[in-house]
Image 1: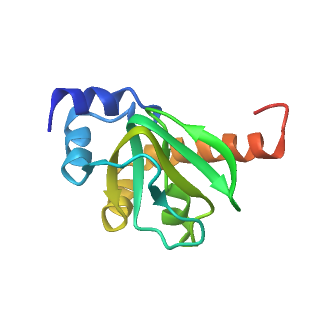
Image 2: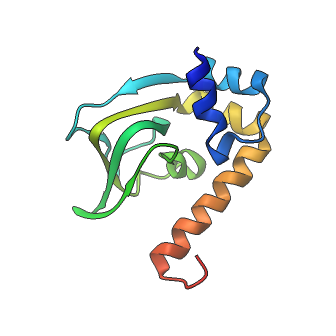
Length: 139
């Protein structure tokens, strides 16, 4: 665990309200993963195995083979299937040296229960994503 990792987590709105102790717990149950460019990190319709927060690089998001977005450092993906237990809604492909902090599914629930403010922050992001997809003018 490094000071850089703590700073990276603290800069993400999802973890902003966390104490240093709580952030260290998140890092203890996380793993830093480097993904080769062009590799699918998640596949549409597959089961959920983890949550991924981008440290470096980009993640291309596609649905039914069509690119629908791109995420960068500080953004995250994989939470929807962990929350609702349904298959992945999109394929996520590594681009530009993607490096993530990944939390396995079996640890994700524990973090959510211990930090309800994280669930609230996730719900706000999910709502913004839905509004953007629906073309809502207030997104």
